[in-house]
Image (cartoon, rainbow over all chains, first blue to last red):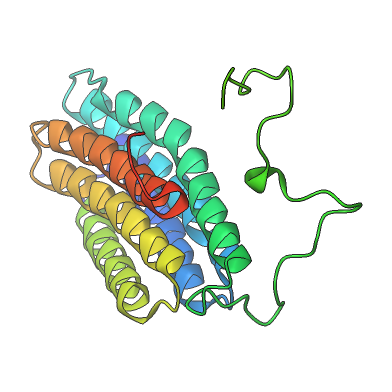
Length: 140
Length: 89
């Protein structure tokens, strides 16, 4: 134990190690997993959680060690946690769209193409908005 | 102890960026490349936050915030272009 040991240092160091490990796991999943739908899991969950831990560690560092309260970390955190699911959904929509068009650059992976939804319906990402729902604009 | 954690953090985030770059060049589909770019933005934000702790200054957080916004907008723009053939209709 070094002479300058404090619990604030230990907390910040633990959060940094935790966040970096999660980021590493997320990117390793991006490299390792076989198909895009599985690859989406790594960055959307593990990397976002890792960055969240990093931002909490940074906020704790500036609060406990430097004595200054910063709200930038909180802003980045909120913005990231709001946008990560949206971008993941958009990428999944692109994947389904390219698969449906028969694009050869969008292989389905070992699991094959996504299963058809039950009944004669198409996936909701391909459908026009139903009559009377908020997305159904007049005249389209 | 904090120095060791910072060194581990720089190594881990840098290695994660390298793996994303591999997926960016290798990725069989367009959606894989968009996903790799999105993850690279997230990992770059992590590196900026880490550099902010290491250099003991809070001036880099604006860069992190800007990068988060631009990364999200560019991901959605790529996806909209592939889905609809147009970004703003």
